[in-house]
Length: 111
Length: 112
Image (cartoon, rainbow over all chains, first blue to last red; front, side, top):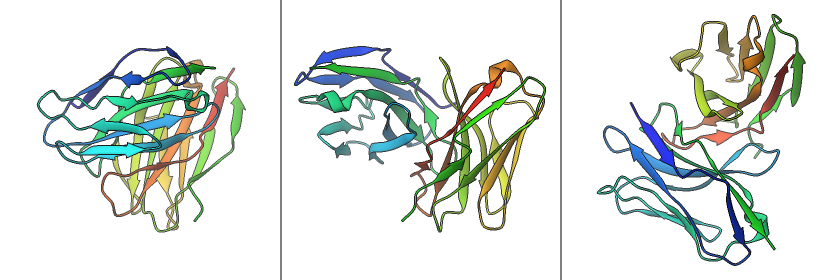
């Protein structure tokens, strides 16, 4: 079945540091890939998405590129802020069915 | 446009009781998904309803059930509650776009 593996956290960075959260996946066919963010005490918000190979999703300074050859969708941001502290989930879906999530990576940004 | 809403925000039950959680999708969305976010276990898919029918369910026992009403809102029922059912239960809705689900804030269920 489908699965998503993302790096374990927590990740602690200083403000303005560069962020990378690794994500790899296993899926049949050509899934769509997502990053969701969950701020403390809140539900999930869609951060960015990519629906086909080589697509780059971007939002709020975050980026991720759909790499079919390495089955990866790593999340990056050039300069993190304290307000980026949250749990980040990599996910995929084949379409109308369920979303398969990774286990989440907690990011803590310190001033 | 209002987002996905869930009620109640928090729910405290004792072992063996039943819990009912509710979800209202975004207006115009016909699909509703339920997920369980238990501590240390990530997000697990529970159920998918579309047009009033259960379309798929995850690897959960039958005491987890639900339904979708004609207005597309949905209810998740958990019978014979166990301590390990304590979790955040998230509802998501989807419109015509096949892959984009929008999540509600969740219901925190605590079983004592």
